[in-house]
Length: 330
Ligand code: AQP
Image (tube, rainbow, N blue to C red; front, side):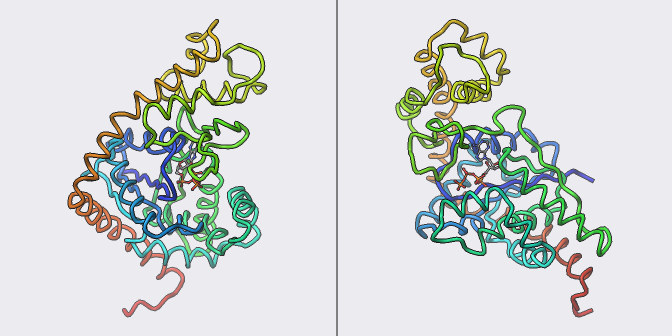
């Protein structure tokens, strides 16, 4: 049986280079090895207030971006999460096996509760259960994610094992797959934090939609550290982050990047990182723009993707419904 891969990103803002190197870029390499399901996670995005028109627009932009990055809708199921109703149904089922205590201990829940203190909704706490539903619905083997999401993949594993122990083999137990480099890209303004699409400081994140001048300007303004050596070290989180970004975009090791910049100053190093990132983003941006001009093609690709996803998801959901004892009319 072919191995299955599932991953998604939220249309909750313009994607950052963290989302790109931590997740999407790697999906492409696996398309020939795995049966792939890649979603625009709009249900997840609703856990934080979204402006409806912007959410709609970003969902389509994200689909175009996936394709521009190399995701092939002919080979994968590329779909919008809310188009496949089994995600919400499976989430309810798994909710009855997830404990409030474990959900309230999740790092992302704590971070987002602090950030959105006026809107600590049930969905925010339930985010990992919905993510487990996403993953388990497709009998997923591998979930390519950035380091920030490994805790949530652990919850998916725990729920799969818990359910299987109670009802017999129902779900495949998935594994997180981290990229070789760029698993945790950090904020350019505060390297203690991860780079995030919803950061309030626009200089903290480099967006995939940023033009060349903006990318270079943001890297020029990136915080570095005291001293002048360009090396990776715990005492140099700013420089280490820039080295990691450079290595991820160039496809070299951090040690190679350190050698390349030996003896150079911070200014020329930051310029080189900015130019490297801007060069890599330009063709992706041009292709996304071209795709967005053809809404009929995008709508057709997403419809076909949702049908494929729905077919697989329905099989797992029916199996789980039978296991728990729901009467199915036969
Ligand atoms: N800084 C990062 N470095 C490496 N990988 C990252 N990812 C996110 N940030 C980084 C990975 O991108 C994928 C999609 O993430 P998401 O859209 O589901 O939400 P997120 O992890 O909450 O990302 P953001 O950018 O921080 O979004 P907001 O601000 O909306 O919460 C995941 O695989 C993630 O690991």
